[in-house]
Length: 156
Image (cartoon, rainbow, N blue to C red; front, side, top):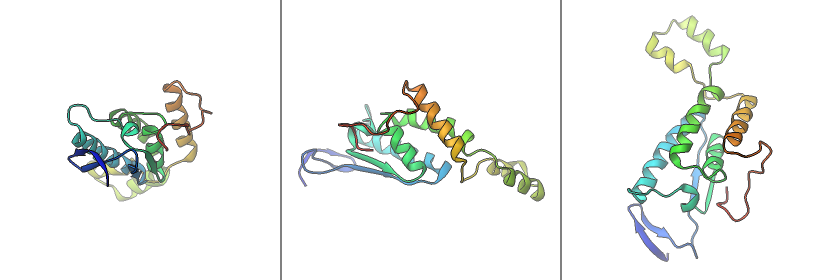
């Protein structure tokens, strides 16, 4: 492998011959852990000025909420910090309480420390997700109907 630079993670791929890929798994609210790990990876590349994922990776992709994070990092060119903040704002709206969990909580009479765990759920309402994505697009000055692919940029 031809290298032009060495990072704490090993040789940085040469932009001429190699691809640098970022794959993000889904998992609902657990997507936040992917972002926290990515934050540390980017800092290990350059502690003083961590690169933006869209500038470092040739392709960013993911499944489920990992795909949503990939769009925020790649197409919307968010920093990891901005993506974490935006994702946290979206979590309560998209992955909020479900009536089923509220009933379960009341039947089990969970102590307050455990009842907090029942406020968020893994599955989400697609309508609330769509509304949350449209809100993020509007906040970034884009139309909710904006194409989520961009010629010449990071492939997302």
